Amino acid sequence: MKILFMGTPEFAVVSLDALVAAGHEICGVVTKKDTPQGRKMRLTPPPVKVRAEELGLPVFQPDTLRDGAFASLLLRLDPEVIVVVAFGKILPASVLAYPPLGCVNVHGSLLPEYRGAAPMQRSLMDGRETVGVTTMKMDEGMDTGDMLLTRTYRPGKDECFGSVSDALARLGADALTETLEKLAAGTLVPIPQDNSRATVAPKIGKEEETLDFSLPARTLHNRIRALSPSPLCRTFTPGGALLKIVSSTLPSLSAEGEAGELLSDENRLLVLCGDGEVLEITELIPEGKQKMKAADYLRGRKLKKGDLLGRKEN
Image 1 (spheres, rainbow, N blue to C red):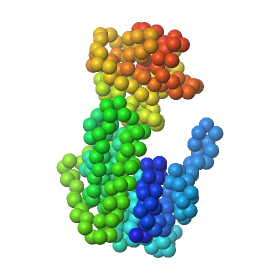
Image 2 (cartoon, helix red, strand yellow):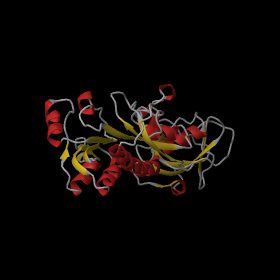
Image 3 (cartoon, rainbow, N blue to C red):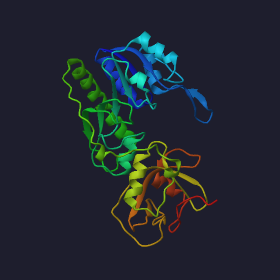
Image 4 (tube, rainbow, N blue to C red):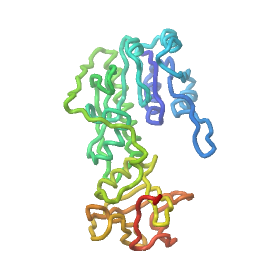
């Protein structure tokens, strides 16, 4: 099958590799522009571009999909199907209508739930015990196309976005290869989405990264999971020093006191939350330092029992 592949992050690389391994002809790979990253703002290519060049595949980084230049590219490449995996751009109607077998998307949720930019993160934030991926036939709506195949996954209670994303990337690649096989054979039965069950998963807002300890412990734990390893949740010491939170757990402890209060200053970073339950921070990144265990951080006596963690004072 002749495929034009569109994708950007590491999540999409797994699907690209699977298509190549399955023997499909990848006529081109479309991805986003290189972006400045890091403290030195070095121009960095997206992971899909790096992998495509390693595979010797032609790479295209158009400014837009809506002009004559991209229309000409489609005519020249002439794909039978367009595969879209975490591309991050909306495909115009002219592109959706071009390939004879349509445009197939791998979406990181069990549709119709979590349509939008951050389905995996939002499902972890909501504490979902089962998450998954869906392949769908794309239409002009936001993740509203007919569903094709699904795969499910049950994350561990403390499992973070990084490992869940890796697992779903593998499941998505598996679902994609099966979807294309059945699409070519004409054996797929598309299933319309039930719009009454639809939920949205908007992009993570910057304000969501700062922990508000007046919220329940489980809510904060799930947010920490959802935003690790990037962009990471954060809080501040009483002196205003930034702490980025890498991981946490729920120790089934309760106490009385003020939200954000540190309940121990020995080898466990136990923080009281708004529901009277305790959140244990297990790994963190102090300002200007590398990731470390919370116990190692506490040995420096930078915090003491009774201190309040929270927002930085203006």
